[in-house]
Image 1 (cartoon, protein in one colour):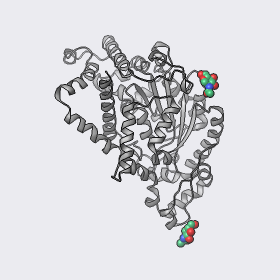
Image 2 (cartoon, rainbow, N blue to C red; image 1 turned 180 degrees about the vertical axis):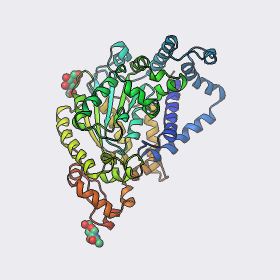
Image 3 (cartoon, rainbow, N blue to C red; image 1 turned 90 degrees about the vertical axis):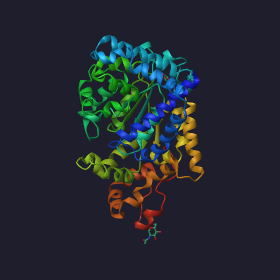
Length: 426
Ligand SMILES: *[C@@H]1O[C@H](CO)[C@@H](O)[C@H](O)[C@H]1NC(C)=O
Ligand SMILES: *[C@@H]1O[C@H](CO)[C@@H](O)[C@H](O)[C@H]1NC(C)=O
């Protein structure tokens, strides 16, 4: 049983890194490109050296999940909406989750979470899932962070629910009420009113394809993912629900923390505006939208997020946290462990081992994932002209002071200095 569980993690890790490769062109994080090649290697190796029967054993449950009704069904091509097929997918998924959760260390009072068994975390059993949120903006390193949370096989990933809003920031009415309604409905696994969200997902597969567990079904059974009843039932099976939000500013997102019934845990992920804007320069979807390219708007958001964050840290000391992308990249192992604890998640031994091997490799001096990840946040120092940096800093003095980023004084200084102060928000 344990062995099988570990294989799922391997397969899970392998496939989400493959997903990066194929589908993350548009919304990838700066870190992701350093992470994937090394991560993909052990997976491929593992597959090659595994004896044939062993492989069959690994893949069997996946097959069962994909083809709940025996192989004949595929040929007959029953309509995907057939109630019976949907029920079978749900029932198989339920069994898989319960297998994946064997050996899970439940909080049982730790981290102020009382759950001591699977049902306590499952909505269809009237439990409350662990809801882990990331609030950030475009190009701030959230893809890596989001996929680490999605590494557990029993996670359901609400990947950026506001894609249909296009390249805009939600800072207040009239957009805010619609945005909050969508987000809350998703966190409650209520898809009934989410027709517009679902319709947007038809030509834009990335609405669903980061949600690895769901996407397997979307690919296999045509149309199931446009069926709100199926989506609701599927969602309600999962003990872990994660979501990343890149369009909702903290002033609005704080309302999610106020909802005691949801009991979300939220991390605000912050990045140096010079790094953000340099990274956005390379995205073709950015230049037409001021919310994306304008340093004045980006830094006004950073200032506003700061002011709200100070209040939220006092109000929700156990459910709200702040992290800078630069700190996360410089010491990912330490921070991932801290973040897991904050969310009340039990770091899976395999995920731990995975991170472990990566941090060790970087100490050995090999050109490794995390060694590269330590450089990634600072590319702007060599990629931007000093004039551009000055242009950004002009609008970002306050934002940079609040979040502990040092201004570059001249072209030479820019290439040599450490832009990050040793700092913690109080
Ligand atoms: C623990 O959770 C309860 C409700 O779930 C809440 O009222 C209380 O403030 C929380 N305690 C801490 C320290 O966050
Ligand atoms: C650039 O700025 C640094 C830090 O303020 C300063 O020490 C140095 O003298 C400056 N160099 C030039 C050429 O102005």
